[in-house]
Length: 99
Image (tube, rainbow, N blue to C red; front, side):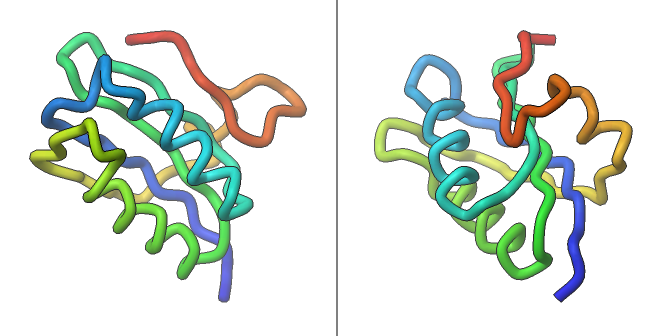
């Protein structure tokens, strides 16, 4: 399968419940590249890059989230290399500051 980049926004009770750390762990286990960050509107935003089937599996996992989260919606759109490159040089997966 070819590599894809997806830009994902997760809403619901997803801040203050370990959601970003869970995303980081799950993405790392799957060997994905990208980043995750909180947004001021209470959502979590992430970019995932890797094989299409693995990225799709990660997005499906985001719909469940960690047990302490209550996911209301997951919006997944095509991403770009510019979005992926918001992480620091040499980082495989990163936490970005809140926007």
